[in-house]
Length: 87
Image (cartoon, rainbow, N blue to C red):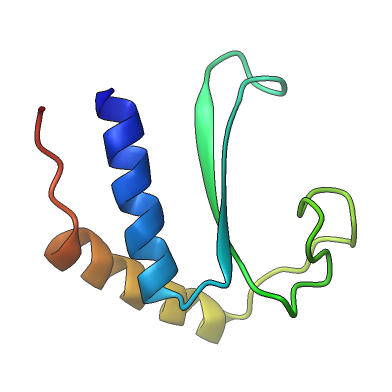
């Protein structure tokens, strides 16, 4: 229950911070030996929209400016918006 609560809170905050059209949240474990959860912000202008992001188009590295912008948004999100507490 705690994982679901925290994942939902993170998805809501990511959607707000990045103005997402929708969020893809998936728990996977097929490529690595442990469970991990992806929270992917999606936009209608995504090259793979509305399909999954994997395998549709070749990966493209972020520019240094894009990385900096993402880091700034995440830093604000993780320090100001998110508080995880036990239920």
